[in-house]
Length: 374
Image (cartoon, rainbow, N blue to C red; front, side, top):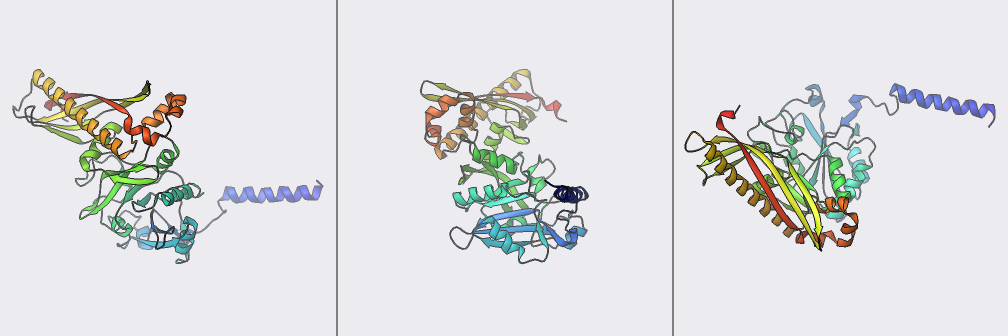
């Protein structure tokens, strides 16, 4: 290489380095961007097509620092654009063509997937999102059967939907009591890992805003069903995401237990040709009330035994339900593949084997006395 070529090469490197350090690379003024905070993915008007929604704050919303209680597209602080295409890129281009401002995806907080998306399309969208350079993998993921405008167009009782809805909520009377938040990277991981299925928060528009107190089950990229509130609570107990769960025991002094929480441990083993899975729950609960108004050590022991039996039965029933649906929400197959990869490989189709897993549930609920309530 001669000196002139070396000088030109070094000059080019200096220019590129200067651009990266000064932030001038792709330096688009803020007022020329639409900062997308939520995206919705729905089936398109034709088979194989998709409709993508891009929600972002209006200039009025930006001026208010996006802290008003307005929920979404129908309010003055937020609006949205839609794009339709055979791919995420085509849908993005179609939406971008409707605005003179650049759609910027670097601040997205939430992905909303329609439960009506076909499985191949769901997987394709997730794969496409993972390849977008301006996106990180931390947005929350949720699903819904309702239109995107109804989901994010509701007025929220919290400062700003949706992020706070997926944290550990204690102050909002209409909010869910379970830590059901799922990040995009967690969804990616489950879709790519054999022996575990996705469990995603389900959003339902209600008069008070948005209810997020149930979860939807997937089999791979295929939506299966949405659990009831009691079933979702059972899942939260197993997954260790319960914070405000309560239990009323009519056969144990009409005792009412609150704040049931605690860790859960899953163990898996191959016994002969059968897969055995054991779930161990070590829960604590606070005794809020009982019909004698005061408690004795014997009463606490009886309440603990009764609560342990009820929770164990509830969890076992829930696991039986997931087996009928062939959705491995705990990742029994994943754990088996980690601990005994050769045995897991010999199992064959996990979709056919999971319904035959033999579950055992052990549960112990430790009761805090009423005087321990803070």
